Length: 347
Image (tube, rainbow, N blue to C red):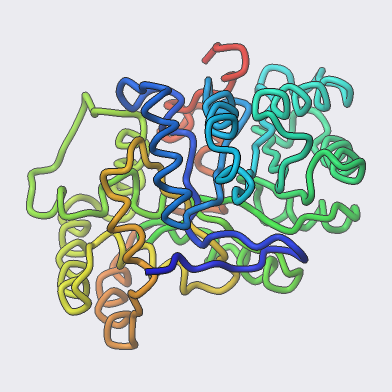
């Protein structure tokens, strides 16, 4: 089975499944760096060659650097998309020079002269000048330290403001899943379609909740096993609660059984079929589900499948707002669990 690929921008062809790095950075169990490197080898050999990483993912850039040294032939096949995420507390004071120094540090950790995509985030666009930061990152790209520029977790109005300012965004990374369709109702997808911005989506299986493991089980609560489950249980609550979520899982299981595939693959294909979506990110801490991920390439949903899913999602109650609006509220349910200063280690 061949992993699907897609052109995100001229000369940048990526796998439609990206291997995420966040789960290797802490909060998801013990990680052995040597084992993580071998897992990277397995993913690359299987055709999942696009790696998503970030300066705030503690130790992960170095792991990818170690992988590149150990497997130089495989390293040549990688597309590395790195995130630049200034700390919340630094947004009003960070300088262009500091932004570039952080990018340079990431390049050194990765052992590359440039990354394929430099993706930047800005925790609160009311703090500091995110347009000026976008211009700085665009200049960094222009000078060859990245091939292209992308954004992460911006609201629809903010993407429009950057486009109006001439920022050359080709990609936007957002949270998007069957239980979280905020970007469809906010006009975000339509804006990206008009401007040729490709969407890369995380949270597609809600941290593992959208799987057979949680079908038919009692509603879980604190303490959760990891940060992802805590985050995405809030989304499930907003969607309509555990009973409606169980109804959705049953519908996904019926669709999956028809296609001889997993609930997770149905959920990923559902999002990959959405307009403007280029790829999905899987937050794999190891290779245990790799064979199933590769099987995604043969899964195709038909109108009957989509109708069965829509019959459940039509009952949703939320979540509400724009793409990342709930998470921006530091006093709200979603914002309170976020860590906003990961470069310095503060909360």
